[in-house]
Image (tube, rainbow, N blue to C red; front, top):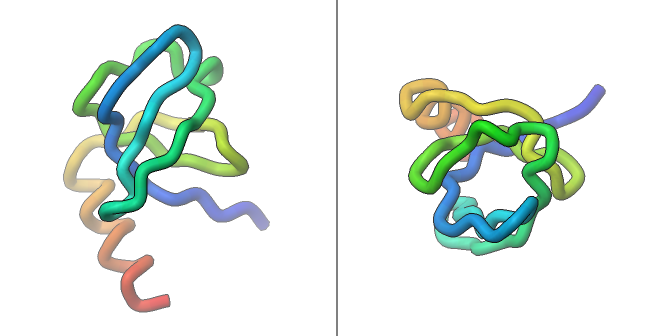
Length: 68
């Protein structure tokens, strides 16, 4: 089973992005989601964005994560 964490993209440079995990900033690789732009939400697993999600989905996932 894989767990992915939602994050908001703050900055993009080449195939990398800086994302915000509820205040924690991290550099990730975005080669699997080349369509993402600054302000988008993505699911992150093992340092890679694996799927673009909308804000509602991100908020729902963050609500669940806050209970773990």
